[in-house]
Length: 154
Image 1: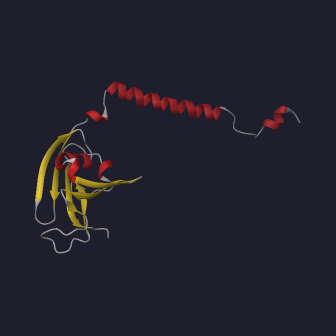
Image 2: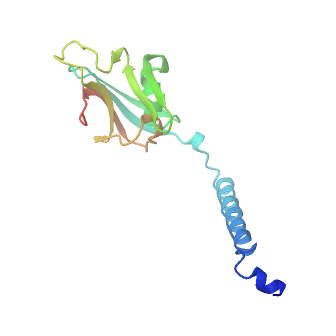
Image 3: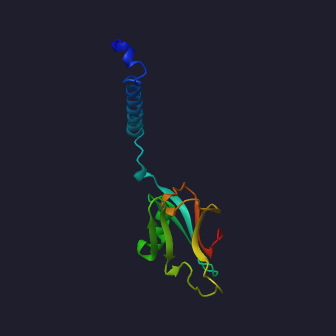
């Protein structure tokens, strides 16, 4: 048996690895070049959004916010103030809002008979948020509404 016969089928060799490495480097280089050419930095993006807080008892507060903190949570923090929001972080999921301005999930609120199944839920342009508020990036002109309402999936 010669040396060539023993190497047949022993592995793919270095060529596929080299091709993958070249591809990855080209992609990274392209992304870096695009960022440099466009000068776009996510920290520089400013959106103007409407933020509504519906306390579920007839009280609704509305604000228009122009901010570079362009997530649903970021806009809420701009309006309510970070210190007035209680939240819990869940690894892999993001933040769950526990209370806004002292109105807590599942706790009695004046004007609502039974709030045991009431939670803060957010909507963007009248669509229930599909991900945590800290992960939802807003577009200019979006309307964010935080509603203290009966949990619709429970």
